[in-house]
Image (cartoon, rainbow, N blue to C red; front, side, top):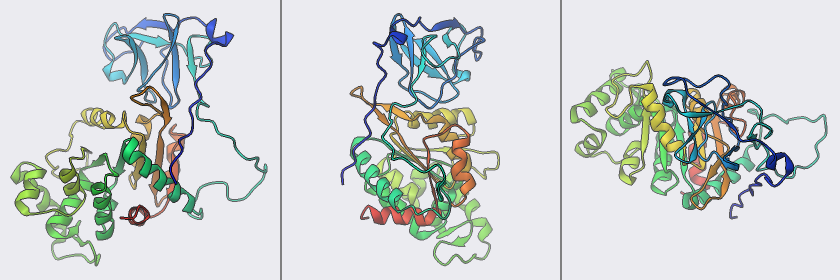
Length: 362
């Protein structure tokens, strides 16, 4: 069944509360990296600002960043990208009375009445996720052609032969438009192609190999010897796995470094803010985001992802955000960090990937 996107209901700016509202207050940034006192901080929702008598939507938003009126549009910037003199929107009301309106129910839908007291309303390991999987298949089929599907992976996806193969099939079939991960995911995936292990453990039998604790280091060292992942793959004749499929299909991937990285691999960003900028460059155009088995990256990307996206034709659509983890705490923590639109699926990472690939007929 074809996916029917929820319709976006824009505010009616002909209402008196909007037409009589003042322009938003713009104050110059006092210094580089510093917002003026009383700056407005963004949320995950569509936000409008009245500038020169016209209500304008911040098209590329991000939670906890600030809106700046620049080059005839609202730009949403991290504090570290603010420059002295930038006209920053100030004001902390959200109802339009100060020229700032946060639109929290743009994608509202009719909900059936529910008893005040009812069992099994939270999403836990006992939840049946069958409907979630079916909905996800519809979303992926739709956005393969009409959107951008961004995956955020932890290394667990590369620890199993079947999930590694299944994700490569997803890439080959066009269901992956960009990939965000850390050094570990790429290292263990490449180790799988090079030595058939992940952290020295056989991908299929799950049996540790003699001196296996060297395997990931040997893999990193070999890649660095060749100078790049693409040269390593070609020289060693490796075609299986996640990173090889990304290279083969020219799917961009961003590998963000961490303080505990080994090596790392050549393309890993060692500067956390450069990594964040590279991640956001992919997030800002994503329409579906799926985070699997990585608390750090899931929360990071969740904080970068608004609940909406403005498409090339000017329409506003919902962003689908899934967090998949075996831990209820991890999967549900995104809501505590402000990513209220995230939908959690509590399951093993490898099972999720293989089931998703099969559900899509791969």
